[in-house]
Length: 222
Length: 363
Image 1: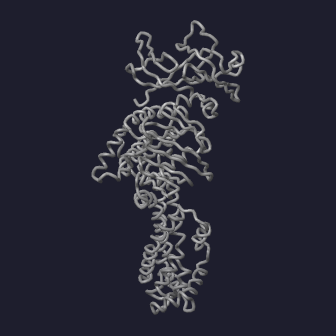
Image 2: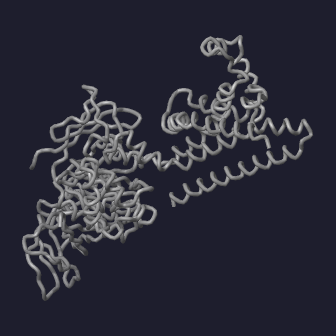
């Protein structure tokens, strides 16, 4: 078991979830309640990482992070280092590929709240902010948690993008999924097996949690 | 007549056509009556601040809530309105008590639970304060919604088809409850409905809406005899609604004598003191027209009048309006009967009333 890789994956998962939570709440709610020009295009963009091969996403990110892109140059001028092959670069990549996993369940959760219930909040004298805190968040939270659990589990398992953007620098960009590949290449099947089983259990647990939560939403409507 | 508490005017062409103006007076129940799509719910949503029409204005107790000329729009949470939604729209994650307390933001926090329980007790839900909406029956949910609407101490109470989701038995007991409530409320009440029975039971004044316009306006009695309005004619259940005053009870005959604009009526015995203001409703299909008073009849009320209007409908029936003194009485008779009796405006007839339903507004 490559503990360094395992802890790095957990760290990346937590950092991704922390960055995506406010983004997903804002964007998921906006997509659920607002109508604007180009909404269909934005929704397609949100879903895009689901369909695009990870290597494609990784390739474009690598180009964007590189020394020849404006972004890469700006980051290098500011911090003196490149985004590619760094934990920060990996985090940005992880946030991008997880957008559909985080945004979509949150959007569905906000959409599932009856419009009249939100209106009743306003008519009862609650400001829009209080309606959000006291009505929308408590009703949407199973969907929000589902999005975040999926994001976390998906981050642990992401392989293609991580390999493209991060390489396999121990302690910096070598995550557990990369470590499994690494061990198989080295004919160390025992280590690969332990790590693969760990990921399997974690993914099953994540699905268990999300299923329980979606049933809870169903019950409350009953 | 007291001064208006609220006056409103809305006008827009699209997406929902609106072109109307009206006043609401304290303690008065105004029904917005119309078919679906007539704009009645939209008017209610404008009053609550949930829908902003293109142009118009709303003034309530001296304050402006909406004035399109001044680009003024007060959002719903800063208007003191109570709204009972058609689907009640209770907060599903909160108990009945918390639902009501959520609308008590104007009170200091420690006072809210007690006030919430007081309001729930007013609608007879003392035992159900800890239940969530999913654990309550339809009628109980509606009562929680009413308690929550009253919690804001509203300047106007808005009811959006509040009975449409309930079965008949529950409905009738809730009518009585709303009737009791209105006696305690000083604010105007607006009732949106497409059911004329609700209008007849609860409303003082009716605005009949069609495609966003008021096509008829008046007290319930006058509107109920407007057989020229298709929606009133279609409300066959409806009939005529008259104000009445209790005169006396004939204990030996188990009948009460009521005084109405059409003269005295006999009704099944009512427990009310002489002088009590009542309301009688005579279903149009329970009125028989004759050219003279026949003998040996089971009906108690035979009213002499003249035909005012005859409006045939498509099903072979006609709506005949009979003037009995200053009152108007609707009768639903066959077109054959219209022809045989020669019913035409000005023709004297006798109206035999088979049933009289008596309610007590504000009791």
